[in-house]
Amino acid sequence: MRENVKLKFSFLKLGMAGDFVEQSKKLGLIHLSDLMTVNLAKLKAHRDFTYTWYAEMLGMLKVHGLLHEFQERTLGS
Image 1 (cartoon, rainbow, N blue to C red):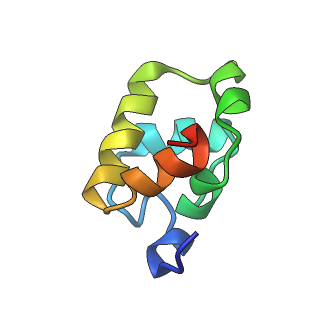
Image 2 (image 1 turned 90 degrees about the vertical axis):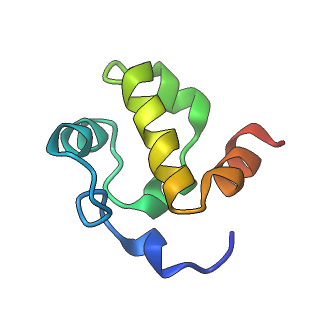
């Protein structure tokens, strides 16, 4: 994974809404680095996971230029 100072940022610091931040905490994700190293299968199996949250998360990654890296790490593309 490339070194990126943004990876140390919390979702709140990245400008995400409070609902997104709270749901992320329930999923065990506090910082962007947590998301970039998550096991996607386990994340999707979590009882608090929703595809609405996931879509918002993908949008956030795209805005911050990290979507491709996330896809490579989690989907092996």
